[in-house]
Length: 104
Image 1 (tube, rainbow, N blue to C red):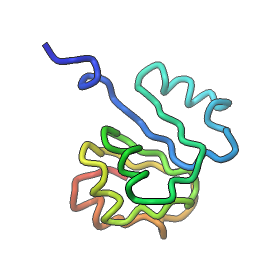
Image 2 (tube, one colour; image 1 turned 180 degrees about the horizontal axis):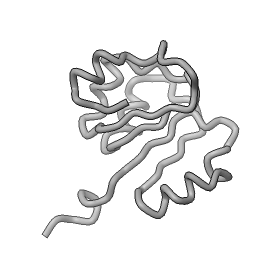
Image 3 (tube, rainbow, N blue to C red; image 1 turned 180 degrees about the vertical axis):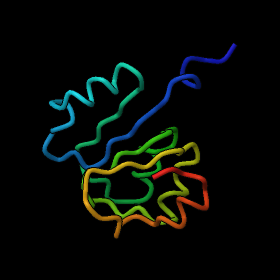
């Protein structure tokens, strides 16, 4: 029998400095379907980012605050989806994500 952790879809929300995620109804709906980890502090190193993303299936990048290049993508071996709230993907290595089969 699979353990509960392996059955749960896990989402990491990065850079929610203003604490808006807990106030948005969409996040409340998401929390009913997935384990959601909201990170308000800036992750300064790849080691910190790796710890935050080690078991995440999806990551939501709040605006363009965290650089998400090939190295950062490699820190999330279970990643299947990257979403963001900003208007640009200049901080995101789209070819690296595509190569790994990660939806954006």
